[in-house]
Image 1 (cartoon, rainbow, N blue to C red):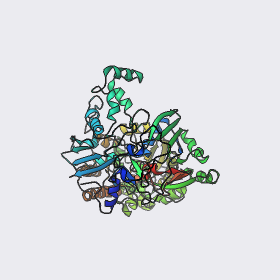
Image 2 (image 1 turned 120 degrees about the vertical axis):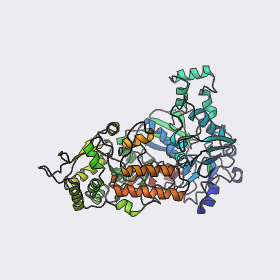
Image 3 (image 1 turned 135 degrees about the horizontal axis):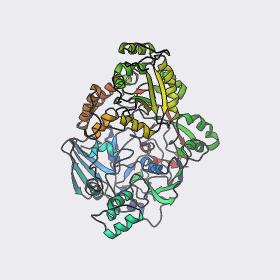
Image 4 (image 1 turned 90 degrees about the vertical axis):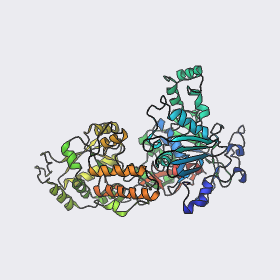
Length: 627
């Protein structure tokens, strides 16, 4: 069945799937397109993706103009491929997966995926895009041991097995797995997608199977690549936006102009989307990304140096940004951060110390720490009461949300917290009133931070005062991200503070990877995550009942075939997360400032996050236009 087969979306599906031919539109040429290029009728696919601006609550824009934005590092130029958000399939404003670059996707029994590209679709250099580009990635790159010695990534495996791949015709490919693979389509919609298609016509020259050996050697020497595989890897950076010769399907493309401090991205003249008035998107001709010290970006934004800015801005900058609005004639709109919590205290459940391990895995201890925190006070002091005090969980905008997920064991009850600690047996105290651990050590909890956000230190200072009231001493230890991860790996880390769940706006169709120990990068349970990722070769097999159950549920989700089945799995995982207080979230739905200067079609409200959302991507930056 089609992924778009949902009641009220039937008519929308026809439009998004690109079933209206280009010749049926009154196409208009973009004024700044070079006259040397073919006319717009020849640049667009035969069935482009048509956007009905009025239906989406937007106005038809005017093409042209230059948008300026600031980035904190030169490598952040790759964000243009995040914000542009052209994906084989992507999330719409309602977080439904819909075809984008693809004309259609058919799914049978959760195992067979037929992907159809748009006839006549072209890369940014004017060469055809189609089945060959998907075949090249699968057969010549992803399954080539020299280019990809680790083998196919997890989302391309179902039951540990790869799919059967077929080229049906010039525009259609099919992947057939023996078992269901619900990970496949959500992965394609990520902020950093896997790019299961590559410009074969360009990259074949660097591949030993197709290229001329002498030409490959010369090219490798030029970029200091060790061999052909290293050369190919340097040239196929679809996400990085650093190779101006690499063809793209994104709305803006790297030009090689500018410098390593100022990048100029120009419109893709072969982009596949048009508005219902017949104008090819994107509206904006050029995006200029200028590198600046991240600490100075709020001040530079206030000075009017950016037309669209959210990166490197935080809640703490809102007051200053508001003060600059009249002088620079920009607007500061407030979107909602889509993480499960702005600040999340995370006990390391695989800590090496046996006394700490037993204590942290006792849910009475975690409940006591949670009950002891006055989250409403934290919200008032740090966020002027504009956030939502509560657990680290899905937000109210998620269809999976239940009010108890936010409030369970998260209300301020210091007396109950004290009683729970007494029940555990932590009744002895030292001369300072700090309880003693079972082995006699004072109950001093070192909470480590990455040292990247002053907000975390401010929040922990407030929590420290609360915990002191129940006989627990909190020590804040600023560190660095790499050191923090290393200490999690060695088991020395006892507790840390980090962002909350990445995906606070989850639907049942998105993988519940935030809730199960399947990722070794999570400071919460590194050893269990490493065990899962290495298939038992590393880390530690989960031996804590809630973790074992979460793993079972995650595996069930990866084998599921229906939305109802996935919803039930998600709900049980969220139930466990709330009942166990695995993470100690503080405040969620904190406003994210977005500065808009002379831009139209930027929503006044919206979510701001990485996955899903791609920051500006889900709000369709290609539809923004300038005065």
